[in-house]
Length: 178
Image 1 (cartoon, one colour):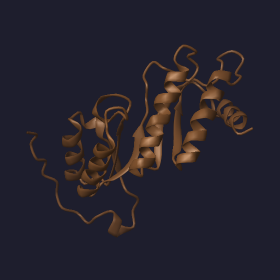
Image 2 (cartoon, rainbow, N blue to C red; image 1 turned 90 degrees about the vertical axis):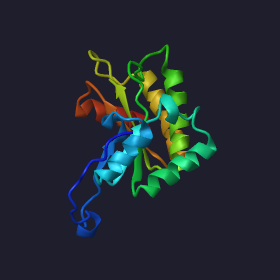
Image 3 (cartoon, rainbow, N blue to C red; image 1 turned 180 degrees about the horizontal axis):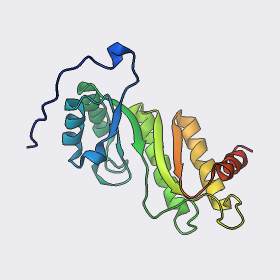
Image 4 (cartoon, rainbow, N blue to C red; image 1 turned 30 degrees about the horizontal axis):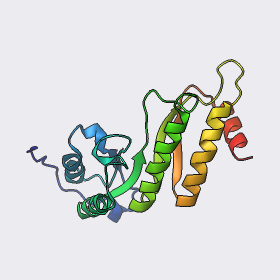
């Protein structure tokens, strides 16, 4: 059983009209229930966690399990601010695995809707060609498909691209919105 962490009492952030501070539960490096309990003991107000693999993956978390998780998080006084849909090594430009990536991400977005979580985040790799600077057709198609599901579910899909400049990202966003 993990040790209890002693935290000095302070005025709550919400009573001071300050924005909530959250933590990625995975960064606490504990089993999920212990991580959530520790986040509450440390007086974080919101949490996010990975949902691609493990006990919190959509395929492993039943409807009943989702309801239990939602009640457990709320009972600790935490908000579930985001689900993380990172798939290390699988970018949106990987022709062999793009369909899998889109399917997994869409299942996570649907689970976020069920849990009342407003945002799904994901590292997506580079979205443009390094030499031509053009948006990848594979990435554009994947973002459109994911975006349609996110829109239908009322969930924001927040991406963390790598190796793309602001100008390149602006081009990608323009192309996705066409």
